[in-house]
Amino acid sequence: MIELVVDNLHLTYGDNPVLKGVSMQLKRGEVVSLLGPSGSGKTTLLRAVAGLEKPSQGRITIGSNVVYDGNPRSEVPAEERNLGLVFQSYALWPHKTVFENVAYPLKLRKVASAEIAQRVQTVLDQLGLGKLGKRHPHQLSGGQQQRVAIGRALVYNPPVILLDEPLSNLDAKLREEARVFLRELIVKLGLSALMVTHDQNEAMAISDRILLLNNGVIEQQGTPQEMYSTPSTLFTAEFMGSNNRLHGNVTEVVDGKARIEGASWALWGKAGHGVAVGQPATAVIRVESLRLSDQPQDNSMELPMLTSMYLGDRWEYLFHTQGDDFVLRVYGTQPRSEQIYRLVLPAEQLWIFPKSGSPG
Image 1 (cartoon, rainbow, N blue to C red):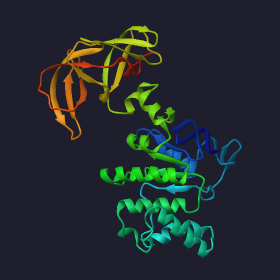
Image 2 (cartoon, helix red, strand yellow):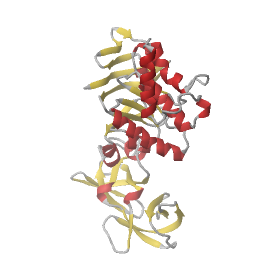
Image 3 (cartoon, rainbow, N blue to C red):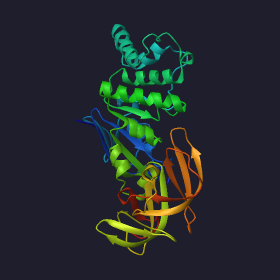
Image 4 (tube, rainbow, N blue to C red):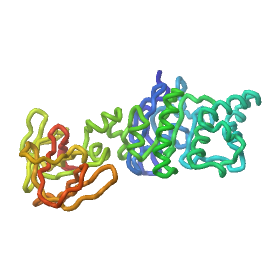
């Protein structure tokens, strides 16, 4: 069953278009992340679904209810959309206890006191906060405050939960732990959630699908595996993952593959849409896809190592391309001396796209 449908949504701030015809769906029990750089429109889209921003065109449907229609114009207020909201700041009332914070949406709906007590306690138990109901927010850790905010959004069983960068206020270590907890909770409770994040690792870990926004439109959408392994545009390829980029000119295109050449190298890779012979292009490959080899290999180049960096779980080696002004990064498991090495760039993991601004 479809819980949320956004159809051809447009939204402008003054003369500045922020959303330019965005369409998406959210199924029951599915988690969709809105991912993209600052200014891409992801938070605006979430706020429009919540009723906190006013679109200029399109339609938003929650369940069987149309909550916004641009033609004829009609709009259901935010407080009547029955959505669970978890804000980046958590927005907890400091003068209310944990129990009172979580109970507030039920009190607004005039639920009986006995039922409130039972439902709030059930949610607190699910969130590992069962014994903390009498505490105030300032007596909790950041992770516990986040769980209270989630509990307040869950307690009245909304059809869709909206999460606005819910982990961004946590430090790196706690964010990893909270990511695991949030995914576990979503699966256990069968939640339908739309989440905004700027952290691609968070999006891939928690989501069933990712919508990558770029300048007010959906650049690409798919499962985390599809977004990472089969980017359809240069923007997607560069945004997802940790990458190497090589700039050159296309000299051959054959059966979905292209050959790109620089000052002192030539490589084959998968040809992106619009790639043509004689065209400037950008080749993108994930850092973890490169490897070092002692033997001659196809799709390889010999380069001097500039330096290496120890990252704890691996080493990162830096190589400078000859005749070109860019650096290639390679991961490894051991320290290496600074000498010339052969780098292998597998053709099936190298994507070639028209350079931004070039024809096609």
